[in-house]
Length: 380
Image 1 (tube, helix red, strand yellow):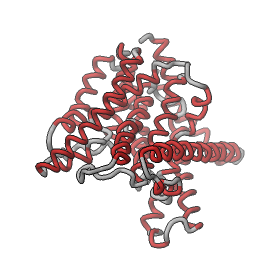
Image 2: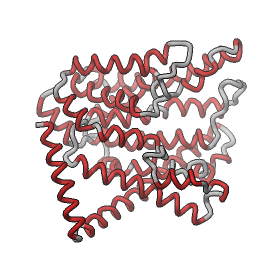
Image 3: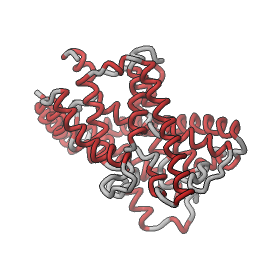
């Protein structure tokens, strides 16, 4: 990739990947609706009906969402122009979602009285440290290391980056996917080490610019094929378990983010949208900055197990009903999350402009900008 193209990738926005942010968050919503709406029957028990089988197929096609989101970050990686300032704003955004919605729901009686424990309040008031949102805990921890990672990536070529990536994938993905027993060091991908691995994969794709990313049909086949293999693998593991009592713990790991077929399918979907370039509607690109709010709203501790029921998960009574409920619920939850995020971001912008008129806050803002300027020099 040319230096000019690389610079554009680091600093510019492309409508295809921005649209993928929207699609990925819709898929995240599908995952939450199926899982927390109790629409996924146990594979180990067997005997599921057509509705249950379809639910698991939808789960397989949606499980790529988180990896796609991280791949985008890695592909367009670079030192943020305002590293500390953006980090503080992101933390405040998460905090307002967590504390604001959590306290409001508690006051309105949405949260049962017996659930209003000390742990509940600690989680909503300290969302990152208490792991209220696992993704944000992993992301913000990684964000602190981003200047270091950016400098390292700037001095590594594609081959060097690929060697490191292979090592990370071997221990966090490949071995887990092929060995017939549980590995203690591999989580289900809900941590910053897997976040870093997928981020590195995105950075490697940018540096190496492999030919397959330009072949939309091949990428689409990789996505569809990977998702079908996820489904088939889960069914085979469940079959073996029911017949022999073996491999039971691996059934749940089949849809982990760091399972090899899940990662390959994510690479395929990422390639499809990357190849679209500027052919995606600008509306989706404008919505993309607010898609994080979709996750922050629906995964708030106060409502994460309630909203699927509000959107009719208990009324699903067949395959067609399942499809309709999933589509309508995903669109409704997406719209609500984007709207709330826009309000919160706008409110924080307004608050920030007001605080800058206070001498102490203005001085603090200048100090933050000085730090950002200092960190920006690390890439020069």
